[in-house]
Amino acid sequence: MTRYEIILYWSAEDDAFIAEVPELAGCAADGATRQEALANAEIVIAEWLETACELGRPVPEPKGRLLFA
Image (cartoon, rainbow, N blue to C red):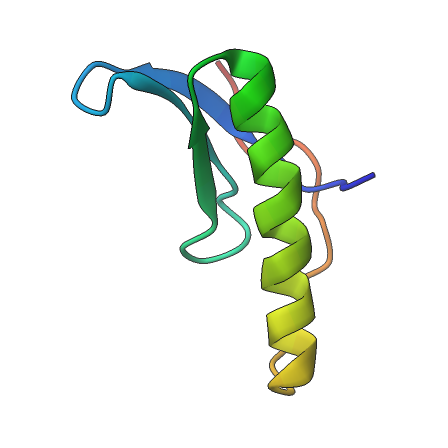
């Protein structure tokens, strides 16, 4: 289970739900439903972390809630 904040919103331009992970630069996913976007986000978070480790790049500690709606 990831502990990074995921921001989920509808994008009319993409005609999809977007799930962004602000703590991981460039980490985002999409899906036709909220559930699909979140599931895809979990996959790309794991891939982002794996790639960062393989390249010896720092991995930020999850900070929890970053934004307030």
